[in-house]
Length: 427
Image (cartoon, rainbow, N blue to C red; front, side, top):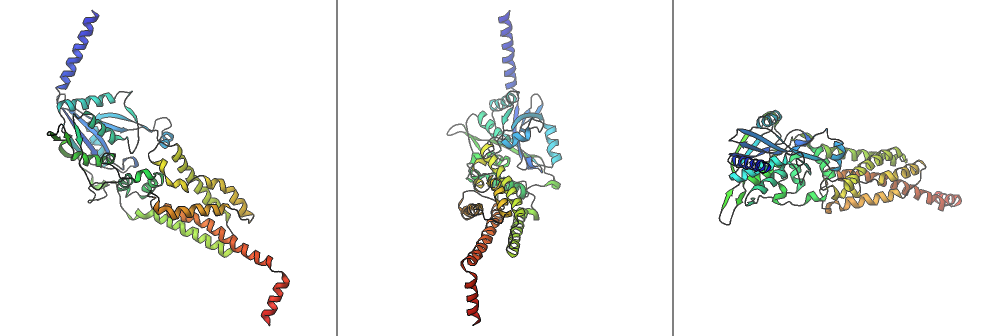
């Protein structure tokens, strides 16, 4: 009886699988244009699976996360966020992006019946509770690269991508999408290091949804030396972009659209840093005029400098976020100002010189001089900030050098020698 029951269950399972293989499944790569939120600035990628036989229309999405996860912010800072695969009806997906105002472009993949079936089965398996979560990495393992990996895994052949020029770096691609959000762009530049400034391969560029869309559009599936087929059979815009919410950067020359909102505030980070530099120069001039060093200004600058240094150092050594461990800014942005803060304040209140100013002067000067040759794009803020910080050791060195020279003259010359010099002048 047990053998018969096992045989019957196996027969039903095989029959169900074969019946499902006969289903007509249509797979489409969905590319969503950028949105206004920080997490949507770079667009999104999803997959639409239409079971035409059973009249099912499902969208699979690898970009789902929840702020309700325990210690979400802390894990996000550490680069230990877990995203998950989720499925939703096509109508709900369309409604979400229509309300956002983003466009959705569908590329129907030119898959065989077996490839489409394997694609669908793989997504269903990834929906299981023990498989749906994955360690998210913005540049190397995100909602777009996961879909690309599934496509490459189910295709019975080799995908040959077109050679699109010019090739970009990670930072250049990110800049296209944050061009209208200058503070977000400068924040990225402040945290991301040298590794995002290397020229990428075609496959590496596919971390961005619109770049994957363009590469897939010209890709072919190479089955043999003589047999190949286009990877995409049809492309349509299923959701049009709202004119009231246009986040494109109008970069016609690049061939890619980004989440830009160009305005007069584009140079606001650079302007803010230049204004801050002028304030630091003004404080230095006032100190020279009054011959008095304002230690309260040291406290504010060194405290802010040290907190920024703590952030860079923490990300450099402890975060799993990509490219933060190759950040050359750790040269000048590290906790050393917090160590020197009590030393500088104590010396300033007693009107005494401390070697700390010389050390700080050497560190900042070397960074500014060699920054053009460092293989990292520092953005618009770093050099003005470094110059602003440099005004403090320069002001102290000028103050104590001139003051020390005056004291040396007074000590070297006795009162009698001074009177003799005055007498000779009167004669």
